[in-house]
Image 1 (cartoon, rainbow, N blue to C red):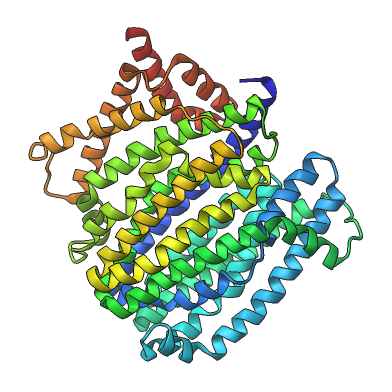
Image 2 (cartoon, rainbow, N blue to C red):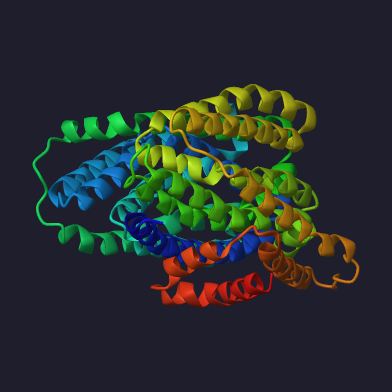
Length: 520
């Protein structure tokens, strides 16, 4: 790697490290809370709890015409250019816009909550639940603003802070309110209150950095909005389509599936985060791609390394979840969620596309300013998904929804691959990805062949023993297959050497891989 690219990646790794630690710990806390809530409410109650947030989530998708993505990009851009006054002006405008629009939307959702429950959810009895859940619109919008601002400032510890505050508050409040006799209402109140608390704590942390930036330039509100929307509108359109498709998916399920089936579906969706936690830190690639230019060797190298290193983490984790889906579901949520293992196995399949760049494409397109490519990729997904989800769900219930997700995301990925080659002239290292796929699947063989030997009375013990066995075999096979090289180890070691905790975590694996590379 060139020195400039090394510095860019290293700065992103620092941010990614904070995101990983923050997201991983918050996920662990949320998993505990979700497990408790899921067990207390049961499949039926958990399905109702999940449906209550469908309408607020739908409205949230309409509120941001690209302002959030532009906030991150221009804050990072102006900060690198030492134009802190412009960055501060962008942040002020984004906050005013988001706070005003979300407040109006919250009032709107509360006012028509019973109508939404009847018309959209086909469950008029959920009106009061939707009304309570509507409050989250305002606080989640401000929560998202803080995360976007922290990313633009390269203060990923801020993201880690608000993620963990929200997780702790939710895990503490929701179960207590349920046990006190509030049931589904208590779970909803705990969920909403957690965002309120996180916003207060995050705002206190954010103000300190905001004040350090000095005065803001006197750009008009409309001028700043024009700048942000011109950049971010394609992203808004893409997000809008994603929101429509994801919520339409739930609305279709509301008509063709029972509350219990929906509860199982949402358990699978939450457990999907076990793999997503590994992808989340790579959102730090967004500002990294903003610092390289199209057509340069640095872009090709950054794309190649990003794809390879995301694949090394995502693909084996996905294969492991597929093999251990029953262990994962029963260990966290109990045996009453009998449908969730099959749902989880299908839901997680698209994470296998990491070897083709699926995790990287969005960050790359948006970071380089090619937001229209992100929009077109989303449009392909939307056009395919909308008719398929209705047809397949009406025939196969939740399984039909999952089939539609797999087909539409496959076609969307195919477009992204084509666009990256055609527009950005990027090349793919298919041999490297093929080796990672091969090693990931071979490493699962012992779990399948010796399933009886590696079987224990408790699901959580099964999960730990089988998971550890898998990753030992995987790490052993990586050097043997030449899926990684000495240069990869040197790159990873260079990127983590300045971060003690990251170095401590990665150190044993780096040492093990280095020893095996010398032997092989």
